[in-house]
Length: 144
Image (tube, rainbow, N blue to C red):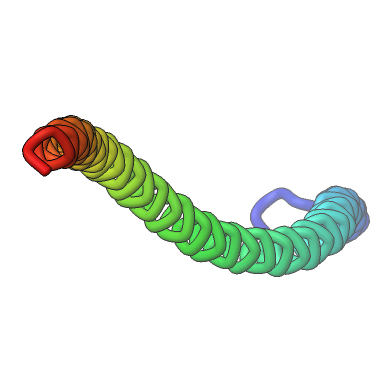
């Protein structure tokens, strides 16, 4: 047996078995630690996935709300622009109407002035005609 005693061989095998068992225990411990760590990490990943899903839903809802608000804002801006245009148009029409009213007032005043002048001339003519008639009547009385 080449100088090795069976008892020593048995001792060596027991020692090798203990070493291998020790290494197996250490490997099992590392494996169990890794499995526990992986389980913990998977739980954290699942938790993060759920949170991401919730955040994604919130983000989608907020995006939809933002789009709705933007559309509403655009609609209100259009209404405001139309109102401003209508106001400007009304202001311009009012200005035009005021100018037209002033022109018509001036024309009316001129026409009234002309009518008053004509009335005054007619009155003067009537007075003159009455005076002439009275004069003629007196002359006729004198001639008779």
